[in-house]
Image (cartoon, rainbow, N blue to C red):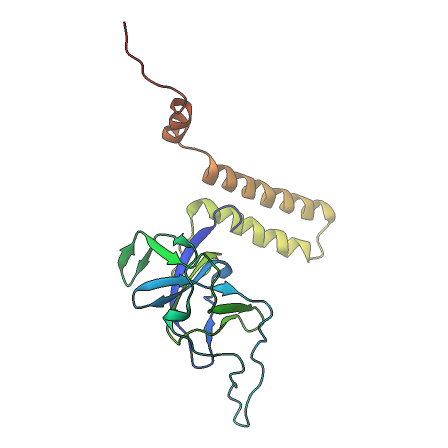
Length: 209
């Protein structure tokens, strides 16, 4: 993940208690927005928001924070572009979020214990969350270049907690570190075209006399 991170965009509906579950491959968010009448408003993070923890006699959660708002309450200040992504099989090349991450209405907070986002002072509508993915989901594909990283990572952990001698542990750790280095070099080294672009960037054409 640290070598080859990916940015994903998730669409979800806010539930009756003002929450949206995090995707299974979620690491951290980059933008959180609200979709109202085709317009995306980025929301404000509020770490002082109390988290829902109460339940009724039936064991259902009690909403302590959600207060519905309307789109007219959202004060537009600035805005940010969301990453290009696919939605329902359609490519979304550009999506602009109004609000710039700060609004008079519309707040959210991460609930990392229950793995969900909690919202307040927003309508119960659709949200869009741009986040960094660790690549571990049901549709993820493994790079051929990453096979050795995983293989030697598993062997390194097995020898680390086994009764083998220290030399063997050091050998497997070295193989794992070399696999990580090889993967990093292969994923980050520029192509020939990228190298030439960087070299030609400082050149300019002038008329010949």
